[in-house]
Length: 208
Image (tube, rainbow, N blue to C red):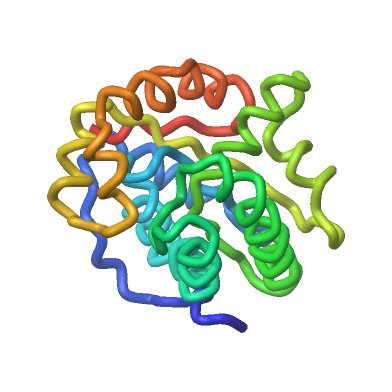
């Protein structure tokens, strides 16, 4: 199991009460399989994923810690920017293969124990919406291994709050987004993807 897989039984994550109430309902519905927590970067999905994992003692698999060294090495060679996660080159050359391996690990573990997956899944949501399919159905159709039971959760957040969280956490992968914020806001955050996501997932949590 890679370093992306973690388990914990210490409920320490704090959320706003309405979000926590909704997540407690989701947690009670999880018996096995994979729960995918997706959303824009800095939307709060990692906080939500940790909350669910802590409350059901599930394995947590986080894309940010899945293969960061590999992604950084490849992008440094391709574009000169090790932290590039937004360019056409990354989306075309690196992202599909990382997600294929990431989903494979999540499904393999999810056949044995409950798994919480933390990743944006932006491209998958776009494709699912274009095809008129649920996100779960689309992910199953593209997976390279049989899927366990699965449910999906979209974390919706205001663009201004996303910007504040990015600035506060200071992650290198956010530098390009913040430097070109208006373009990122219009091309990604306000592109209609949030509305599309709400039509293809099983649960929507508003993180304020």
